[in-house]
Length: 72
Image 1 (cartoon, rainbow, N blue to C red):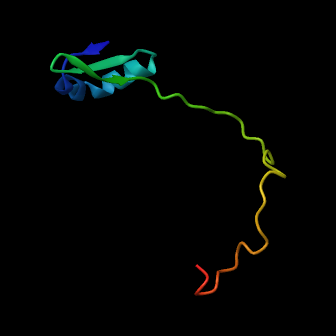
Image 2: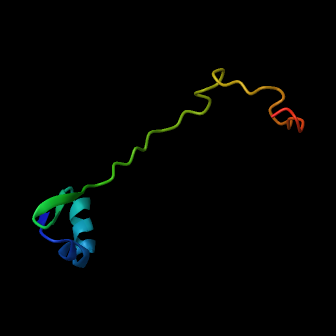
């Protein structure tokens, strides 16, 4: 769907979002030129694996110690 003015897009924003959720792409024009595209935001529901970085990350033993005043 092509929306010809930004004012029209603002007026019908909720219905445009509904159309995007149905899979439609909305192109918004300003002064007759396309300036924006509304598309559905892709959600990546990739399942996380606990412990995937085990053995790959090392935290130094003195990590929690603050440096002395003159050493930084």
